[in-house]
Length: 207
Picture 1 (cartoon, rainbow, N blue to C red):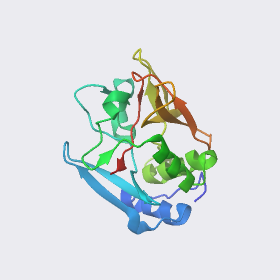
Picture 2: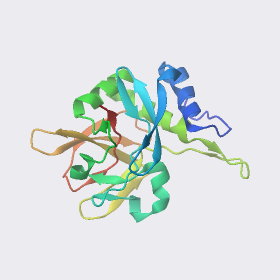
Picture 3: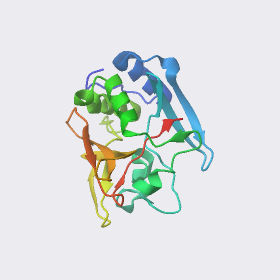
């Protein structure tokens, strides 16, 4: 599937992901699944890529502290999940899952063709997963869940639908948490590091 060409019917999310994996990534549809977070009953889709199994959407679990909806708007949670401080992200994943290390992200990106194209591959997946056809207006609604924006340590938000980031469990050489940034129209993934008080999205990897 090429960017800009979308399915014009609403399918269950697992079928949409299966379609993308078979025709875009060469991953078997048998490697797509779902699981329930027993803490809040939320259902997630998962994808096996190579020897790794990843959540196919952002984490939506709300802990007691250290997580926010973008702009404090509950409307953002369904698509983009919560934004987590790094310390909270360490323990936010459901049982049997955990925050990925920077090396594990590296393996994922290599499986998708390398960091220079991995962002576009992941956002194509988001386009298929969240694509819906509005029967009233005839418009296609494309949600790219990696572009969930960020929250700075001072409490300000920026970037929704323009850029976003995913925390890793790793620290860089200066002791800052390593993260990976994604931007609209940019096929590449950028490696970065931010203060622990910054807040980014979380996608968990299965233990």
